[in-house]
Image 1 (cartoon, rainbow, N blue to C red):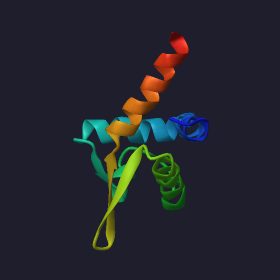
Image 2 (image 1 turned 90 degrees about the vertical axis):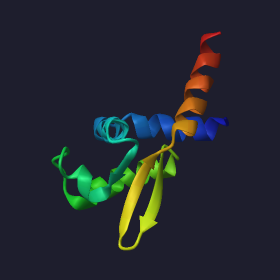
Image 3 (image 1 turned 180 degrees about the vertical axis):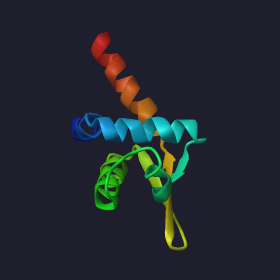
Length: 91
């Protein structure tokens, strides 16, 4: 994993709202619609969209278009790669 990707992921994970979104994704079989996020985060629609965009840009979530709606899936592979990178720092 290159340094730019690690930096982008670290920045995405630095926000408590984005961490909460990731936790809820995990609770919901790794899948949420944007409208589901309103139920557990007290933010405006543009703010939620911004957070989901940041997570998507960092490839921590994968947006899947379903008609007018977007479903977000957890990208476990990217999270695994990030954890592996952090493990290399420990050695």
